[in-house]
Image 1: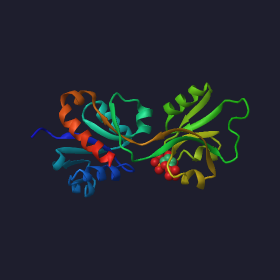
Image 2: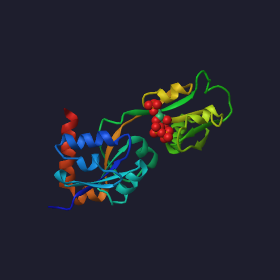
Image 3: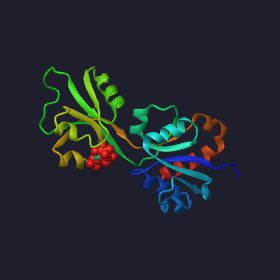
Length: 211
Ligand code: PRP
C-alpha cells in the first residue's frame, strides 16, 4: 500500500463535521474521537494520516507540502492567501464575514477616517478598498466585539455564525461582507504526484455532498 495521504484538519469548530464526513465514507475514526492530546492520528480504512492543527497552520502545512490536503474555513483562506488548490466547498462550518457596529451607530456618517478592529486585516483591507474607503485597521486576536464597546474602534469585521455574540453585546450587522464555509484544500505538488488518490478522495466527498 502507498504511504498514507496526510490531511490536516482544523481543530475545534470544524472538527466534528470533518470527522462525521470521514465516518460517512465508512472509515473508523475512533482514533480521532478518542485522541486525548495526540495530534497525529491514523485512519487506516482510508489510508489517511490525520493531523489536527489551528486553522492558519492547516494552510501553512498544506502550502509547504508536509500535508497533502487540508480542511479549513474560507475565512482563513481569504486572510492567508496560501498557495494551495481549493477543491471543494464542504458545505459545513457555514457563517459569514460581516461589518458590525454598536446598535444605532451611524457608521457611514461624518468624514473622519473610521477605525476597524478585526482578526482579519487582509479581508478588511480588501473590503474597504473595494468601496474606495480609507480606514484604520487594528488587529485583535479574539473577542473582537470588545473593541467598539471599549471605544477602540468604530466597527468590526468578524465572523458571524448565530449572531448571539453580537446581540448579547449590543452590536448589530450593518453589512454582510461574504459567506464562509469549510473548504478542502490540496497541496499543488501532491495534486500532481498523488493525483489518483486525491481524486478518489475528492470523488467520495463530492458523492456525499450530492446526497
Ligand atoms: C467567533 C467570532 C465571533 C463569534 C461569532 O469567535 O469571532 O466572536 O465566533 O459566533 P456567533 O455569531 O455564533 O455568536 P470564536 O468563538 O471563534 O472565538 P474568538 O473570538 O476568541 O476568536
